[in-house]
Image 1 (spheres, rainbow, N blue to C red):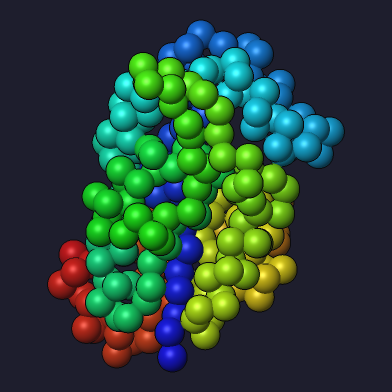
Image 2 (tube, rainbow, N blue to C red):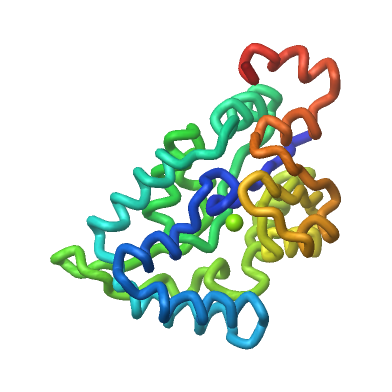
Length: 225
Ligand SMILES: [Mg+2]
């Protein structure tokens, strides 16, 4: 009986929103924020917003390396302990993000999650490390992408749980996953009302406390700290 758990990255494993941080560094926040809002309100397709934001930010390889380290530096309380405990209990841990893959893998590898279990959007760079587009085939740059990735993972396992702060994370329920809303960084009412379970505390160990049986919690109490 193989169980998978899929964690969102931005505002779930890390307290930051990668695209916002990049927009700030590039000095294009005023142009990027309306695109994000329009996509979230459904006035603009996610894939259109995705391309437009990256065209404004033009992140180079160096800034993506920096973002990867920033994800590690801004890890949410209890993230490492929760991932270790879940792995010890036999869960297959994945990271599913609409963020930039080369940065997300840094945080994932810090948590011991292998690259093949990181699902995010790959960026292309030219020979000088300048931004040269993104993987247009990635479902994660489109509406419904998280449910699609969840379906792919679920084809290999018996059951899955998705943990995230956003409404797109809740799409995983359509794929048959249990969805846990995480409000420890940002609390969104729409997520709280749609999630099967909702966590308010700013500590990811709550995920383990929610999913594990009392006997399992005993087994991982040292890992949870
Ligand atoms: Mg998120």
